[in-house]
Image (cartoon, rainbow, N blue to C red):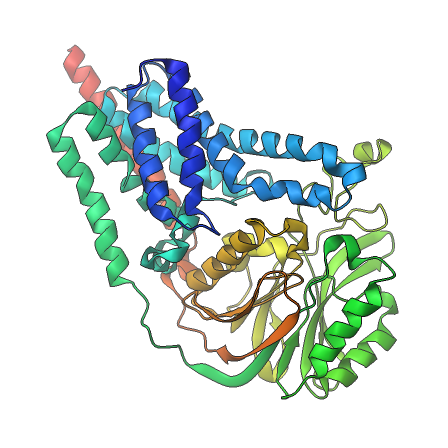
Length: 500
């Protein structure tokens, strides 16, 4: 085993970077499992809380530094103004998110009395740290542990236990085994194999059938204009991208619903009457969902509009879960004095948040839950809807994410929401990846990244509400609190008995 404390920290950072290979687009989940085994061995070998915290922070920094490398892409849209921020954004984001994990490692080492208790506490505290990362300060659950399973049958466990539960069982299946190996405990190794075997058996049990799900008989079309972000609002290119979407809208054969991506309409909502008329004419009797920006007084909104089969504006939705530092700046008044606005803000005005999740009635097309871009990252937003929709509908502009890992990881999270709810997902992305996703998270039709085009597909039927759709994250959260409290109480009682 590595003796130098700082060499252990460096090795933990390397293990974190390797472990992130389980995230899209690579989806090499065995490497993630191996990295977690190595990490648990390093953690048990740590001799004090400081070493443990550094190991957890280093692993997290390596994980997030690799997994979130795409975060530099938004700063390259206007490199003369923003490129200098890119390395700082990656370093501070990766290191900041890793602090959640560092605290879990510190607490587990501080409260543990032997390697068994330390690993038990690490699983509990790390799982709670992931809850905090998903909820605190609006949350940022990107690159979560459960996302490594997108290419495996284990992905279907989301319908039962959700993303936080999937992260928990991932830790249960890896950390005890790695710790037992470094502790040279044969009994521990055998016991550590049990959760790994159970996870494998459960994955086989929930593997989706190879047959397609039933469809509603309606056909939807997702449109992908492929407008690079540095050209999207260039007056010389706007007509090209808009006319491209009109052409895709009017293409034969006829469909029931056409979906344009986020901010696809190049005029403001309040001035869009003639533009809506042109879109409705091209749709020729089909309903259309499209992304558009709107102002209400001094407030700007990132919105979605629904044009019914008669071409009338029938519904509208404002994005409510905004991207910090992208669509708005915390302490905006102070930041504005220094000329700092969100990267995706409009006219040096940050976006305002809409009232919250809202199910839209799209007439014969049923009930849809709209999600604009970043909102599909949050399962609690989907569970927060007032009623169960017939499908999820995401419009997004992933041109901000470049062509590396970001768009692929965003697609994985859209698939996760579908599995968690047992609902199909219709996804239109400006530069990709646009897709129709069935309620088992399988892509039935898609358009490759960086390609202009459209895809027609039957609208899948929803499955019955899943266990996770009915309960949300509460069962896993309460289980962790109860297990942690019971474990600490038991450990304290044993310590008192030994002292006596």
